[in-house]
Length: 368
Image 1 (cartoon, rainbow, N blue to C red):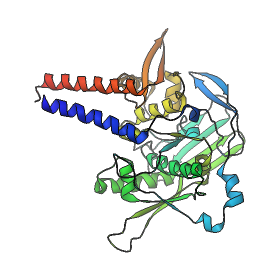
Image 2 (image 1 turned 180 degrees about the vertical axis):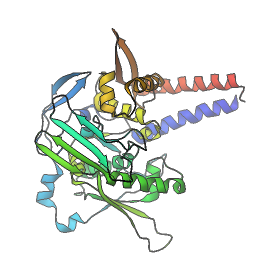
Image 3 (image 1 turned 90 degrees about the horizontal axis):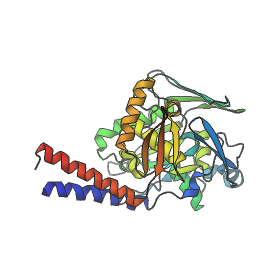
Image 4 (image 1 turned 90 degrees about the vertical axis):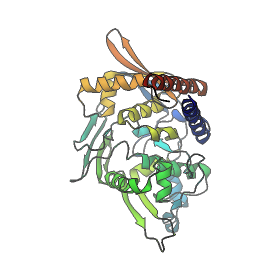
């Protein structure tokens, strides 16, 4: 029983530490700004989807882009600057600032849900105005939703610099390798070094051919990455990551990124990560739901529809998303999945329920 209570306290302490990192849930008004992919047009309404339907909410917002700032302030000397991230996190010894996701890319299947996908991702919106094909270089897998963790850190730092007005960020970010691993909850450096290099390589080797209205983009997620050579063994090993111009512009939009809960990095299922990004994108202010068919389309899953349905139902019943509750809804034979943002108290209740299940399991198993 002592071990059981220790496990419960450890679980609650972990939850409280995660809340300390996060500070608070992202502000509601962060989820009402929409962006265009190539930074040319600005919309004053956010379009969100309920099942197969589209609903527009008028939100007059002023969007400033780093492109304008760069034209007036950036010099050649500035363009060579890099940003080195410094340690601050309480549960992991680093502060990369709030990690952020690119809102425009959160509800389209640009990323594989598995780590070994080779088949292209092909998508076209119902109106045909938004189309893309994601392919790969020979000998590589497609960039996955796990590889995207690196982009969350990099784009979050770029946005933080812009918000603070302290500098004009470069597309190249420099960060000590071991600190990046810790920010992503990768504590075994030796085990994850090669995995990190493979993720960076896949992000570079994955090619996107996207058309949005009259705009077209062809390229990858990152342009290059490299290690900065160390003068001696005591010097920290630095990774320099240069993201693509396209992704840089999206990261520089004011309000174009959404904070990601640090506990997201602990989600091991690609499908559950997809569900979290969907909830974060659409359920920031109120309950939201999608039809089973629409989620299948948005996920880009390689599984057939029946297998996807089975896995999705199991995931929804586990209710694994930090900060959000999920619900399986059968409405006159048509299946929907509901998403709802939950309060800190409701989340603590979930921790308590999980601890109760752990106690029951240990008692039934005879574990002391």
